[in-house]
Structures are given as C-alpha cells and as structure tokens.
Amino acid sequence: MRIAVNAQTLVKDKMEGLGWFTYETLKRIVKQHPEHEFVFIFGKGIEKEFIFSDNVKAINIGPPYFRPMAWWLKFEFLLSTYVNKNNFDLFLSPDGWSCRKIKIKTVIVIHDINFVHFPEFLQKSFYYYYSNLFPKWAKHANRIATVSHYSKQDIASTFNIPSDKIDVLYNAASSIYEPVEESKKTAILNKYTSGESYFIFVGALHPRKNVINLFKSFDVFKQTDTQNIKLVIVGERFYWNKETNSTFENMHFKDDVVFTGRLSQKELKLVMGAALALTYASLFEGFGIPLVEAMNCGIPIITSNTTSMPEIAGDAALIVNPHSVDDIAKAMTEIARNKTLRQLLVKAGNKRKLDFSWDKTAEKLWATIEKAISE
Figure (spheres, rainbow, N blue to C red):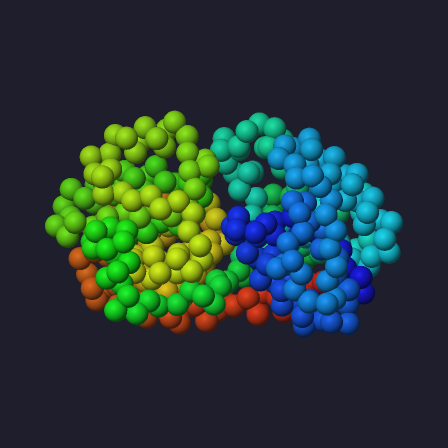
C-alpha cells in the first residue's frame, strides 16, 4: 500500500499530546510494515529525525498557517489535491484533521471534542472551524480511532456516528519516564524549590486545564501546610489570560509557585519523578498523558472526576471535583500528610501503567487501518 500521512504535528521541540501520539505510533508502524510506503505530509518543514525508516518519504505542503481560513485552504486544496493525484491507497490523519475532497479510504484519530463542550475557551473563528468541520470529517472517514472509551461515546453521540465505526486505542507515555533515584532527588529539589517538596502540574496553561482553581486550591492548602510545600508549574504561558493572571497575583502564597516553562523530556522526567504528587484537576481531557507519565515515574496523582480522567487513572489517583477548590485542597492535604496513602497510590499506579504502551497503541492503530482497507 501507499499511505499518505498527515504529519503536521511533528514539529521539533514543540510537540505536545497530539505530536507525541503521532511520533510514537508512526515510528513503530512504519518500521513494522516495511512492505508499505508511507508519505509524511509536513506543514512546517521536514525534519530528518521524523523520517523513521527507508519506506518513509516526505513532502512539505507549506508554508505553516495559523488561522482557520488558511487551514481550510491548505487542507481543502493543497493537501487534498496532492493526495488525490498521487495514487495513494489510504489517508491517515493522527490529529483528526481531514478533508471531504479526499477520494480514497480515510482513517482519522479524533482525540477529543473539547471545543463542543467549552466553546468559551476558543476564539470564535477557531470554534466555528472546529465545530463546522470535525463532524463532517468524522462522517466522511471510513474509520475513526480515539484515545478513551469516554471520547468514543462522546464522538458517537455528539456527531451521530455509529459506535462500531470508532476504535479505542489508549495513549501511553514515553519510555524515558521512570522513577528517579532517591540520590538524585535532592539535587532536583535544590534546583527548583530550594530543597522543598512540591506538587507538580504539567500542561499548557489553558483555561480548560483548570489552572485558576489549582492556584486557589493551593492557597487554601497552604493555610494549614507546615512542610513549606511548593507548587511547580511546567508549561508555557501561551494561554495565560487576564483572569488567570488576576487569580495568580491575588494569591497569598504566590511566592511558593514556581514556573519552569516548557521542559525537555529528559528534564521533565526528573522534575516529575521528584514531585510529591501530580495535580491534574483538568476540566476536560480526552485522555491525559501526564497521568501515565506520573504512574511511570512512581508518584501519586490527584485528578478530576470528569470526562476520561477516572477511566485512565483508575485507583492510582485521588479523584476530585475540579470545580471545587476545597475538594482539590483537601486532596492535596491528604497526599502531603499521609505517607501510607502515597505508597498505596504509587503501588496502584505501578499496576495500572501496564495497560498503556505505545506498542499496543501502534498495533491497534494499524488494525484500524486494515479494517478501513478491507471494509
């Protein structure tokens, strides 16, 4: 087969959830199936490190675009014309973006449809683009894959898609994430928090990630904290808005919040592994890769009782109401004071993490491709 692949999310040093899913699955699939040819369609330049094997070719359909109208022109005209004229058997889009003009079999991975549930977190032009086109792409696709049973149900019911057209394949975490040796933790604590223990949050500082309530909850927690525990925030302030800034500036304990910005995987593994616990009380997640990263690093988790997060975390986390500042603060207090609880959550995480591997994800994505071809 000749398979055209939307590789727009493969961007060196700037990958988040969608990019890592694309990277980890494609790296395995192309190597495991040398009998097929894959053409990666980039949008921000071709990086040699993403050409994983000899059966991969690459083309850049650029320049990079950052606005909905430009995206529409790129996919509806440039990408679709290229795919239709070059004798491909299948089009694979690991980030869910597609085009109804594509005339061959199509598989798309829709990770979540948060824009349906939280339109207020998007500019109007972005919301219109997503809400107008994603349902059409979903109906046009031969098969859809998604990353949790929650997302499968959400996509099926919201877009009126038969559930048997949607396959579930969990995300995973990079193998780089593993427990940090006790001898190394002191140096990490000294580097980031002057030697003090800390909770960690990892992710884009987007309103959907509930950073505002995390700040408020940490302030409540600190009122009774006797251990001088800090809060480390890992992620760029790209989505930092006036409400987030106001909440932070009004914190009583804002000096105990440490911002690291984006970290390399190698450094994040250390900072994650030395943390007291991951605080990930997001409002909406299709999966939540940091949950598995935390399990792999051997630290406890605090996460939300909404969307996919209870499904992914299982019994490896304290489950909280993300809308309740007191609920999140109470969980932080329990984690900080109860060593036995922390050990139980880590033990549960060591068992739960076995359900998530990129090898399994790649195998299931390939199975979805084979179903699309055969149907």
